[in-house]
Length: 128
Image (cartoon, rainbow, N blue to C red; front, side, top):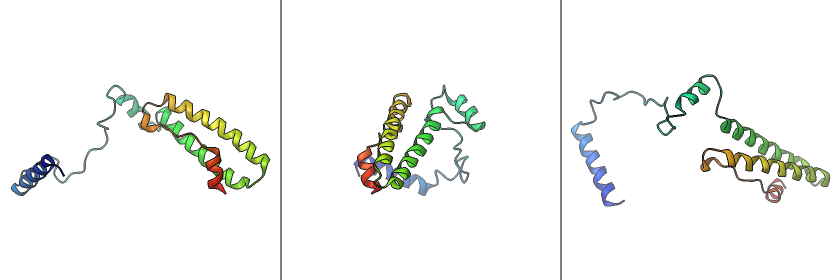
């Protein structure tokens, strides 16, 4: 813990003991989490309309679809066993899935939402 953090913690503790936080207007009430403070203000209304009508931004829907496809691929790999024809077919599906992942990553609004491509050989080892 650095000195500034230590001083801040001490000041907060002293204020709490003096009752500085006792009469706040939101004291005892749950936090209002209906708005995302980190959301781009220019997109806030559009996101609210989508959310209220049961929709999500395209990249959220695409991410869910990609995760479902990855899960199906892994299940198919476990079921394929050592059949060469099935393995070749799943290898081709993996190439297509990796193309979708690459396309998603190029269009996705934030790098921290990117998906890693599927390493077919590693997945095969995990399925065995």
